[in-house]
Length: 417
Image: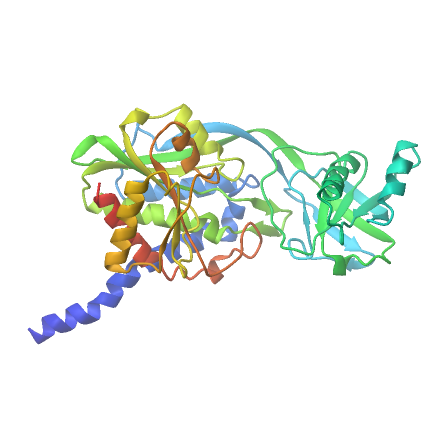
């Protein structure tokens, strides 16, 4: 009896941490350099999809139409090779000292700098109107520091796009750098840069930025399911696997919290329910092109593999990597009954710090289901790291400390239907 008790007590930690270990392994894999930021350079998105496909196969999940893949096409602006910037003779660090806008075009060569700020913008606009502005061999620096007026701030933003039709643009940004997927391109680069790395005394910069706009990228969703006792009614668990990709040869965006962590949760749920038959059939949807405008889920609801009316509920997992301060439930104010069920389940079992409610938002893959009147929530974790859409969202700094407890909360919630 003592031996049984010993095994029970000391076996608990291994059970608790098995989910976390599973999640860490998935996040580390998807954030490795091999996957190129899961974007549209070097087929990063395809490599990530193939990894998920193998895991679905490993868990023995069922297929619709004998295939996990659902293909669709998108367009994106990419930076597959050359990205470098020298200020005078100093080479800057991509993603840390500066960030090129995702809609940037190409430019190569040395450029003289012209600074535009609150003191000379009126004069610049007058010169522009009188055709007295020279664009050849010049690059323009927009510095809106000290401007409080919203109309003037908007003018600076619009001016950047206008100048980028004719020459490179630098925009001073002393806040956090945040990147995205560009779905269009302008002729010249737009570069966000820290003021300390581009002093007002700077005369010349050298750029080597090469973009390739891809107008017809074949990408994919991956859809699999576990048949439940009520096989014609479905719970959907979703997560997007794509991220931002690369910026040149050497710099890529790992996307650990956003959203390798969500994929890890989806795959753990797939493994769990493949071993524990659920009441309702559960569909696992790994969406592509979320970062390009939540396009994978949009394509899915327009081309469903089974009737949308048969979906009982959607749980979308996006940013699952922290949890120090609990979780937030988008659409919780819309689906009050289900939110209360989740909150009470957490209160009774003390899985995470708190379950916070939020209203509607079009910020992840739940959105298109909601637009079709399908009950859907988006759950994300709070607290911990602040890295987001930058080069610092790495697996090494994402410990998934609440992953195990959060997985239990989600399993309990799904079983409550």
